[in-house]
Amino acid sequence: MSEFTKPQNLQEWNENFEQIKPLMGATMAHQESARCLFCYDPPCQKACPTSIDIPLFIRQIYTDNLAGSARTIYESNYFGNICGKVCPTEVLCEGACVYNHQNQPPIQIGRLQSYATSHAIAKNIQFFTAGKDTGKKVAIVGAGPAGIGAACELRRLGIAVDIFEAKAQPSGLALHGVAPYKIENESVLEEIAYWQHQLGFDIIYNTPITTKADFEKLEQNYDAIFLAIGLGKTKNLGIAGLNAKHCYGATEFIENLKLNPFQTHVGKRIVVVGGGNTAMDAASECARMGATQVYLVYRKSKAEMGAYEFEYELAKSVGVKGIFGYSPKAIEQDENGAVKSITFTITNDTYQDYVIDCDMVILATGQEKQTSIYTQINALEFDQSGRLIVDENFQTTHAKYFAAGDAVNGGAEVVNAVGEAKKAAQAIYKKLMP
Ligand code: SF4
Image (cartoon, rainbow, N blue to C red):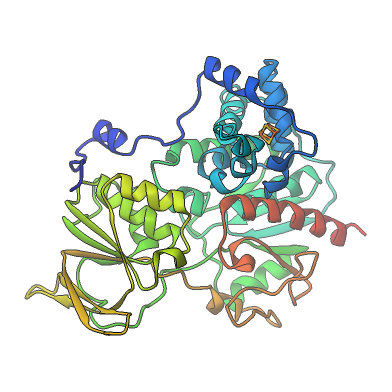
């Protein structure tokens, strides 16, 4: 079924995980930018969660003002290069482009955005400097899109920043969770390094902030604390057999594959359970790793899937087969404790069991909220879904703590986290500098 064989080296990996939005060349960028109609009241800009002035940056590309174009993008979004590649542009800016109403392909906004910003990063063009020192210090917990986005804005406003990151590398979801065919690790890390060098903030790695004592220390040493801790592990599905060898959570599997592509176990006959974008990514990645059979099984109908249609189409294009209306019941193990099959209940009137033989199961059934961390902070409140409660200034129910990104919105795109974090940083500045 799969057209791919398991990659054995970097070259084969790059072939299997070929970028779906590769970097444009100058000629293509010029031609594509020439198509833009420079619309009045542009719908593309309205659809962008960071409100980038899209017609302006495209016009600047057209007039060979690449530095100006990148600056326009970065004024609104510090993850301009990353977002150009990982944003679901099909349902955001490009989905809103007026060309869609004329039966013509929309402007390739994402690729143009990455084209301009990659020029600025490669030339290390310095657009911004740290603001005049206010004497204020903010601790940021988490070096993902929200944490880095807030750090950049706070530095421009003259506030010192230290970021505490549990992992060994920055970027959170952008590095650890985005499918390799959407962006290469190097591109993610380059954009972070570009800002760190330009605006000056420390990222303290391998330093999880999880206990009451950890937070009390931050409260003593900083004027405010910004929680950008994202989401946690894959939710426990509560079915039998989850401890079987080769049964993985999707978040953990995707992260392992991204960071250790040749050491990560990938079976031959794989069942991915779930109907969201993470399930699509996990299934696509298994197919590209040479699995011969990848079933994507969702408990409801295809129409009820949370995944974007284009993500499902992408998974199908590499051989993934969708099965709908099957709810997972139990995972069976062989004599060695490894996955042997998974049983589903067919969720129509019959409620019969259906068994799929397989040697690996991936559960893409959502991620846990990090409520065990929140309970370490006095008076910090979260809602029934585990989302942190914040006011219009991104201030939590504890006056010293602010928050944005997945911990507040429950799990959205990289672009949402970066956009919210920029606004949160401005609100923190206003609170600290009345
Ligand atoms: Fe250009 Fe399309 Fe935006 Fe109009 S909607 S300004 S054509 S990108």
